[in-house]
Image (cartoon, rainbow, N blue to C red; front, side):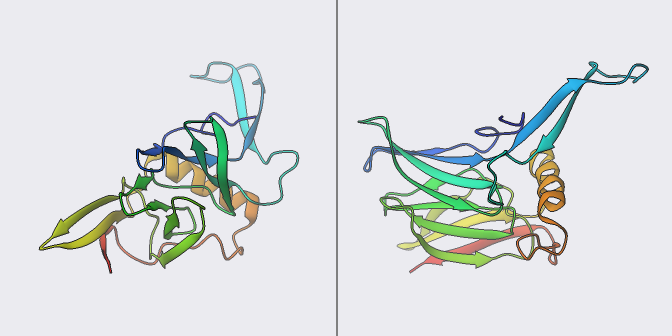
Length: 183
């Protein structure tokens, strides 16, 4: 362990100076590496096959917070599917992120509890952003248009969990920008 696409890889974490915590999206997956058979074209000669961790309980995603004053784990939240977006931490005590199960969630920055979630019609795939218009706060994320990273992970996790697993949803909506108001 880890797989070359995880544990901590493409999706960036977020730091909140108010909580003094670093929030990290984690992929819990391994790979089996070895030499490939002779005669493979355009190859390094090394094979890397994704594999669940030996102690896997079927949860491949994790969001965790590190207290930067003590360098200790403040909390962790595990999920069936791994994160598909970077994280966004807000001054209002929220952490936003998307998962391969097509969900977009708001977590409590202090505890990691899920405070809100939306089921999108496609994979959340961009950096979430927040902005205000006329005093009203919004959070936005792109759904669809998965990166090489998220597209690869979607196929791998689908194989691990099985196509019939409710955590793996076939996209039903077009790529678009999705915006939510923070009331």
